[in-house]
Amino acid sequence: MPGKTPIYLTTPIYYVNDDPHIGHAYTTLACDVLARFKRLDGFDVHFLTGTDEHGQKVDKAARAAGVDPQAFTDKVSGNFRALAEFMGCSNDDFIRTTEPRHIAASQAIWRAILANGHIYLGSYAGWYAVRDEAFYGESELTQGSAGQKIAPSGAEVEWVEEPSYFFRLSAWQEPLLTFYADNPDFIAPETRRNEVLSFVRGGLQDLSVSRTSFAWGVPVPDDPAHVMYVWLDALTNYITGVGYPDTKSDMFSKYWPANLHMVGKDILRFHAIYWPAFLMAAGLAPPKRVFAHGWWTNEGQKISKSVGNVISPYALVARYGLDPIRYFLLREVPFGNDGDFSHRALVMRLNSELANDFGNLVQRVLSMIARNCDAAVPEPGPHSEEDTQLLDSAGKLLVTLRRSMDAQSFHEGLEAIWAVVRAANVYVDRQAPWSLRKTDPARMQTVLYVLSEAIRHLAILTQPIMPGSAGRILDQLGVPETARTFNHLAICLEPGTKLPNPAPIFPRFVADAEQAAPAGTSGDGR
Ligand code: MSP
Image (cartoon, rainbow, N blue to C red; front, side, top):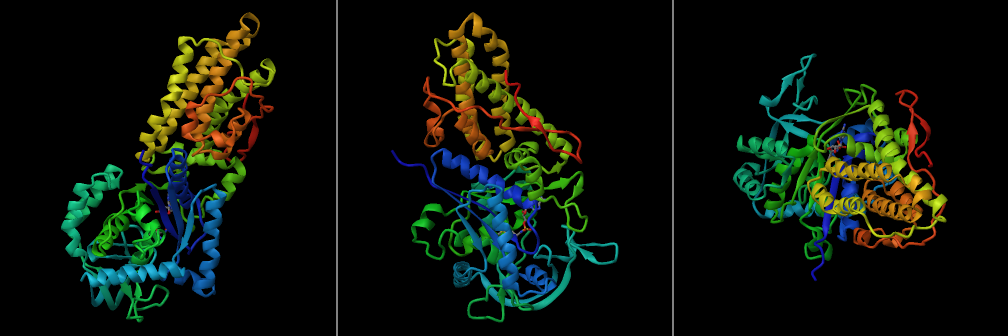
């Protein structure tokens, strides 16, 4: 039987001009959930994240800090690496654009594009926003309150005039439109796809792809007075990560084209227009899909250092725990939409969905087993229709989740899981195993067995989102670590297996925004 096709997932590589914040954690987290899901589903996954270390923005930040750019990027890149680890991300590699492997790859793609006749030397005179590392046309700009010119992103632009190499982007308008038409899933969500399409239909200008007014970048091959435009260098990280320029390598043939570049909506244009054009011009296949998610605001306000409302992932996790934060970020907002972060919404969701719905279910069932079944997996008798219904709904979840994950619809996947969590709670109430203890102990054993099986499914399937908590539930159900993949969903709990003492999984928090803190743990312990 042929194996499943390998999967390659990437996050944007983050600029090292700033401290990592919740927005960065969000993108990497979304990719991590997909990577974990696919691995548990038997796929060979390669998951790449990293840092974008060249360009004027980073150069300026290093100068402002009074350090040379290399020392500066070493330090800040380390902060991003630490954040991915702290958020429990399972990336297989962490790329830095200052690494020799990446400089070699960037120069190789430049040479390939040049050799195919898509780069020419000219000179650039126009507007540039250092904050976005992007060129803008006069017609895109508006006037700021102090009379300064402002890009659509809100970044200030400056006038740049210098010799520059150009990429013949204008020639790629038709091939790109054909590519989008042939690959309707290439850009998601749909509204973003339409934005890109209308932008490209409006016509594309050739793109300046080198700079001469500063030196912090990858030198242009054979013309070191120029450094490569930071976006050409940065986008190339996705192929560096799989061994480019060695296109014959196992890595490259296995993982390229990437299955998914996960990005924020702010950088979709670079990924959905420039990147496939660069790749096609170099004779390489474009990625299969780019998903642009929305932006978080903080209690209604744009998150920015100048406003002073940056949300630190470290502070959030210290207050609420890692898995609750992972859950909230992917559950609160339909993935692709913008979302507002608030402590109130967070506490409500953690209390109602994690502590009450899921935590309580697990706690009730496991403590009844501990007390009434000799702390061992109960022995089931014949199944009633209601037993079968609950088990079937848990059994069907995987198919639903595969669809949601392939559409990057995390909230939908979680809703489907929680529908089963709620059905299991309704089942407990209706079957009332605490009453059966005296009247029909054999039936009580069946009910508790059915519930344990439902919980086992739920825990296995929530591992991608909440690896630690789901793992602890599986520990308490006596499921060995080697029996937790989606393949193992079909292998039922062995009656009589001794179980450890149950312990609560999800804490409850008090609702006051300022004082949100654990207020006890889930479970009525009946
Ligand atoms: N270096 C470029 C990307 C190059 S990829 C080849 C870059 N870096 S960045 O540090 O500015 O990161 C931008 C990404 O961070 C966004 O696309 C998004 O994924 C994430 N976010 C930053 N702030 C965010 C929010 N407030 N909300 C959600 N995500 C945001 O652009």
